[in-house]
Image (cartoon, rainbow, N blue to C red; front, side, top):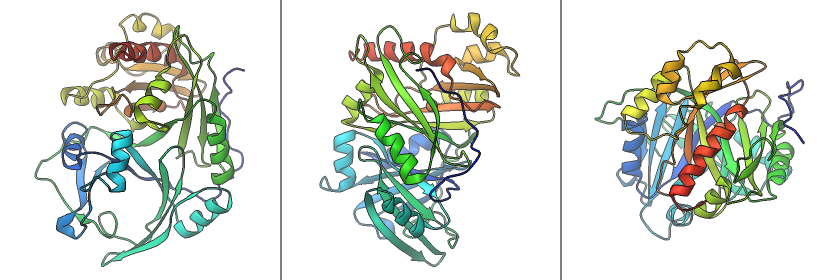
Length: 374
Ligand code: FE2
């Protein structure tokens, strides 16, 4: 089986329309410090907060925004609390991939009718700025999707939160929107979750990568990408494949103690600027050897960016039938070798950088070996 090509969606089959990613919520051990990392190192602005000072007794949440991206960073006080149970099991990680819809109640019921398992029933949250409806259903591992409609709400984030600014003035790094969110699942489970997104959400299979595409000397993985009709939501699902040694997906599954979100890809219009600023702020990236650049121009042809700048920043380049893309991956952003970010700039290309897989996975394996996990 070879990589299938991108298909144009002739007909939209979404079970319910999705307008985009509403927010991504991380459960962490220390929300206050994590929120500062996102402001100082990644250029997010603090926009809203809830915690004991605002009447929430058991948890704290910081809402951070840059471009169209909204991250919610949540922790809790009691070790029995579901948030800290999640952290004890998985380490810091993504709990919620929230979908922005027009009708959360209808979306939730359609998902449940088609086989999704409920995380929580629809609730209406109200304050002086209006109301939102929100409901949740489960996806892989302990991860959930919420559906959120905010057509009747004008507040900072949601009822329960207050608008909050930081005394620290962050400098935006050019983050625009969430390009895609990748899940890692157990061996044999990829097709089940692809079918879940097809059946429950009406998503379509966009691309398949098999272990021929994504293997190095040691390890391999398989991946399928599902997308909604407007293409705003793209969920690649990875599973480990047999290799000589432990695959990067196995390492994730071992340290996350199960399936979960592997990376969130963030779109920028100027990746050289974005990555240069992130590096200056102390963010670490995977390293690809300089000889990658010896042959890259033959492979991708002419591009607008200066190759020396890309090499200096260690940014990778790939081309498909529609254009090219520039991408780079951070090292894991918490202690466990689990969640990381991708920074991506698309210049026409709608694919995922297949031409870079070998160089990237060799780089990931070097890191795995340093951790003693290869
Ligand atoms: Fe990606």
